[in-house]
Image (cartoon, rainbow, N blue to C red; front, side):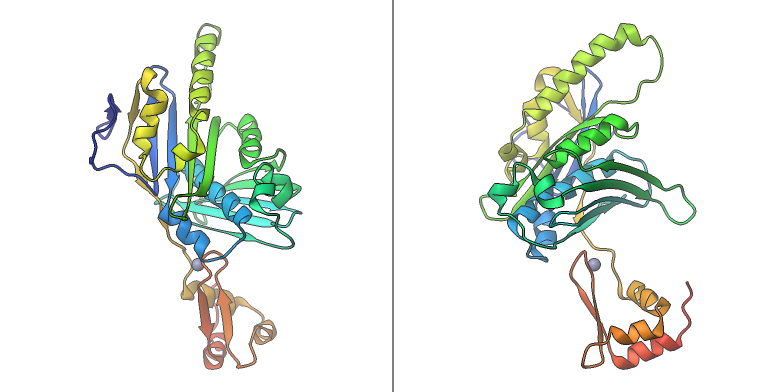
Length: 320
Ligand SMILES: [Zn+2]
């Protein structure tokens, strides 16, 4: 690969390096294991700031966004990767989605009392999501294969739940270390470190088995040794942290990919939905002043349709 860079020494000060809002793929030289680091700063802060969720929800959604970006980057696809949770707790639904070109968005539904962060942080799954499931979907358009994986919400943290998924999945034989929290300037950040084990491809498994197993365990131990503060540090680029973790085994990085805070909602899409609605239902949506206001769940942007616009929408046949 021509875009790879071997990190043989700590990168020089002042070099052009991605610090935030990116996915940084890497490979550990000694073992050939691949992984990625996702680091989200301004993007996750922008997404969360549009909603005003309690701290505990911000924390969990931020981790979810980092996880979604990390899993999406592991797949070859052209479309949308969606990570969704559904449960019977005070956060009945959470969604994070990332397109193959790095546009990310997310939201959480809140129903009921959210415990304070210090109470929720050790066990956000039972305290916020409750019993339910998490699902991963890759949508590549109407005529393409749709991949979906589902796992029950079992465990205290998002890492626990996703680990159960990895154990039963061939798509994601991975381990993940997630972090979310406030930076010194008060803004939210999130990060994910992933290391991936490629599925066995036959061959003499017994001979290579033990060496592979040891290499895997060592990589996982090193990856899990990364502390939240290091992963979220605005002054510690992913390359520097990867070097800090894996330098003894040699580590190289590949071209990083940007992640952007960008919703995919549009007035045209909402019009299509409104057109497809039953006219009586559409009337029911009208506010006292005759307008219909549709708010995007993801980005909180409101689109307002006047009485006349609604009437002309109803008169136009929908193409769907
Ligand atoms: Zn939107």
